[in-house]
Each structure stands twice: as C-alpha cells, then as structure tokens.
Length: 404
View 1 (tube, one colour):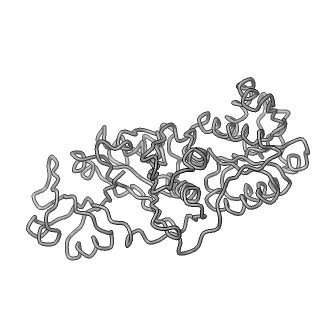
View 2 (cartoon, rainbow, N blue to C red):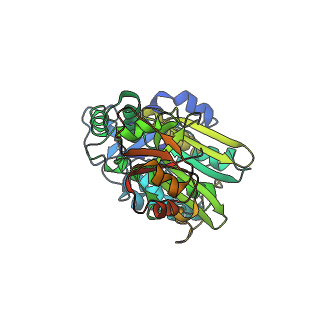
View 3 (cartoon, helix red, strand yellow):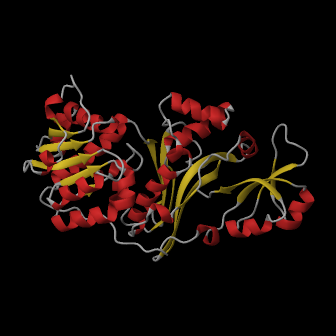
C-alpha cells in the first residue's frame, strides 16, 4: 500500500525510517500489506537524502494520487496542516498525525470529515510521544467511567523541575541546560508556560468524556514562578511537577487545567524524572492505571505514528468508531470554584496569624529558612476560598497539592 508523509522534520523523517527498517514487522501487523512511501511533502530541499526521488513541494501530488490511501501529517502548526488534512479526508484518504496543536484546535471538524467520507483520522502520537494512551483510553478502558486524568505531559518542564529537585539548579540554569541538550526550543514559551501541556489536556479530555475541549477553555499556569526555596520546603512530603489535570463533575461538566502541583511521595507520578512523561487515568472499575515512557523524540513518536498508519491500513474499507462530539462554552467549569484540594502556601507571616485564619495546618521547614517566612499545607478548599483567606497576608507562592 502506498503512503505519503507530509513534513520531513524530526518526526517525519523518523516515520520514513521506521517504515524502511520495520517492513517485515509491519507486514505481519497488517496481515500481509506492506507500506511503501511514495511521496514526501516538504518545502525544503534534502540533497543527497536516500529518499530524494520521493520529495515534492506540491501537495496536489499526494491528494491526486489514487494509490495513496494513508498519509502521515507531521508538519506541526494549524495551517497549512488543517487545510491539507481536510482535503485528504474529504477525498477518502486516512490521515495520521502527531500534531497536537491541530488536534486540540480542529480535531472535531477533522473527525467529522473523516466520519462523512469513511476515512480514519488517528492521532496516537499527539499526546505522550511514544506512550500508548489514545488507543488504551478509547478501547482498553472503554468499560470504565473515567473519573479523572493527571499527566506529566511535557518533557522539557519535567527535565527542568528534575534538575531543580535533584541537583539544586536554579530554574534559569536548568532551562539553559535543557536548551543546550536540545530538550527546549530557543523560545521555550510553549513549554515553560504550559501551553504544550494544555493542548494535550484538550485531546485527553475530549477523548475521555466525549465532548470537544478547546485550549481557551483550559486555564493554564507554567513553572516560571517555582523556586529552589519551594522545592526545598516541599521535599519532605513530595515533589513539584507540572500537571495537566482533568476531573469529571457531571455528564455536562468537567474541570480541566494545567498548573504546578505538589505530588506526594508514593504517587506513581512522583518518580517520573527527566524528559519522561506519565499519564495516570482513574477509572471507576479499574482504579488507577499509569502510562509511562518517552514523551517525545524522533523514533518514539514516529513509532506511534507508524502504528496508527498500520491500523489505518487494516481499516481501509471500514471506519473505526472513534472520536467525540461538540462541546459547549460552559462545558469546562471554573476549577477555582469547583475543585477542592489542599494547598502549599509560602508567605511572610507568623504562626499565630496563620492559625487564626486556617486553623490547624501542616508546617514545612527548610535549611536557611528566614525567621519571618512560613510554609505550610492547608486542608482541602477551593482556590477562591484560599484567596479569601490569604487577604492581608504577604504571599510568596501557592501550589496545589494533588491527590493522584
């Protein structure tokens, strides 16, 4: 079966490599069908590349080739990826993507187009890189009511926090090291401000609860306010992670947000270090299950793309039951009013003041703690309730404490 690849960057070149080097395995997985790359779309030139004869700069070469049944989209961004994908799906060609931004923004429209034409739109690689999570959530956990999801969804921020926790590096030094090692872009905003994790939360929430969630519905906070002092205070009870969290409230309401969180020692998420990702899914029948592995990288992500291409090849003449319906503006509630959790608080105050406001709290300490500085863990409350209690107190930082 002829297939095409749009975008020959890190992931796209990995897709071609995996198809080339795993022909016999793929043939077994498809029931005898081989995948043959016939077109590679990219505006750049790759002189001397072993696949040089396959390159094209004209999308129509793929669209108008009746032999191409499955296309991998690894371009990134919303346009022109959206326009190309929509045309391919309407033409009855299945599209596989690793493009989390596109799925988060336009997934509903593209799934609808696939449904109309009988093609498949699959995106295992859009969340968690090489970690299987989309298929397990849609198939293996189908008998469960999903109660919540919590994920370390960005390797760059997890690397930075790991260096702060384990090596005592400042945020700035850890970020520079991440950039030097190729884990962070020159402009790291999408990672450190939580936008990358937000897109993945949208996809997971849409899949888990069946209604589309858009990035502007997910309140997002990054890790730029986390300091070594916070890491030190929290070390006695847990570690700080950037988590994407989704919670079921009712059939018409969910909470979804991205923020730093205190993950307590003993949690499956607490030991996930470096650039690795982990996604914990809580089902009413199965309990907690955790999916762990490399969240990015050329071959791990490419392996997920090719796995979807194999699945699409097996379903050329039949549609997979897969996707979600439209959401609504009020579908994602304000978690600050609806979710109660304990909080880590660091402030300039004395214990008498804190006790008069919060009652009994769990105090934390660190080496070199200033005499007027105080840190503690509150009882469960909403974030809005916390803000009211903290009025008149000089707050340095607050972090949610998760129960995952």
